[in-house]
Image (tube, rainbow, N blue to C red):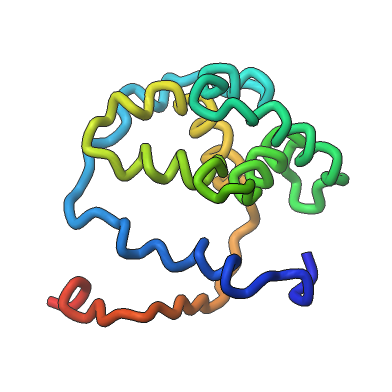
Length: 148
């Protein structure tokens, strides 16, 4: 996506959800390491009731994907694309719904996400390492939250 195609006010919403972050620590996802690694089509089966448009989202992602230049499998690469895809309305986007489940106190909400999480976290682990500096600008003072 070229920068000229980005609708700044709408696009910025993806990066301004710091107010939704929890103050506390969450329990780890239990038995996650035993979750099998499956295809993207298999990984989305349990979340179809949560995200009715997920099959259409996958078609969109697959139609716009080419060969991976980073050594990822097609399913790994497409899982990252699927997570990154912003749907309309924004609240129906996979990233929005998954992030809400990850931030929830009730860890049971993550059960349907286990296969997808296993796939996308495997994909992220396979990405080549890089060391750029990334800045995130927000319109609030978080000093008290992060400094001792």
